[in-house]
Amino acid sequence: MARAKNALRGHFVQEYTPGQEEPGEEWLELAKYISTIGDDTQEGTEEEAYYDGDGTPETDVVSVAGAYTPEGVYDPEDPAQAFIAGLKYKTGEGRKVWHRVVSADGTKEWVGRATVTAIVAGAGDASAYETFSCNIRFDRIPKETDLTPNDPPGGGDEEQIEEG
Image 1 (tube, rainbow, N blue to C red):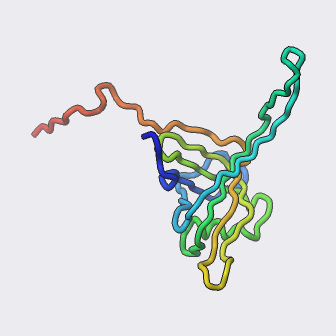
Image 2 (image 1 turned 135 degrees about the vertical axis):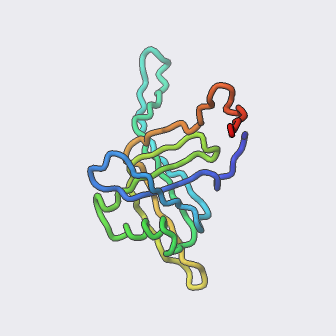
Image 3 (image 1 turned 90 degrees about the horizontal axis):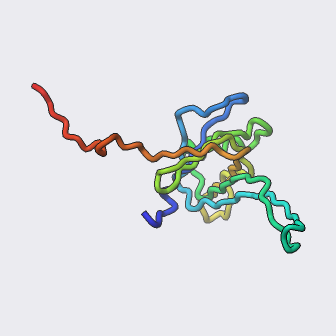
């Protein structure tokens, strides 16, 4: 598949408990009434010129903080939106979540602890639906996992014969 729609990429969250090393199995998908998800990844860089070059500064990326900003219409009955909305007046560890992103083609996922900021769960013009948005920023580089299934020898297409 050369191109894939953004709607096929999955963004999931779940509660983080302080000290927890791995997320659980139950994920809440941020999808219902979400119309756009921006990539707000921030990179820290340093520039340095060396005598073995021509004096032109080289850029080194020294940090990467992956971040996403879902935006859409607020639905307080959607479990993922309700979970995020419930973090609005929390601070410190109370704003930590597990975040999981699955590529649009379903071949990779990135999972890590993240911090939720800039929570909006119900705002906007009187004539409009309530808005929902937030920023979910990984606290460190997330763990990348290859989701491509390993085919058994022969491709797994062997015919099953039922004995009877």
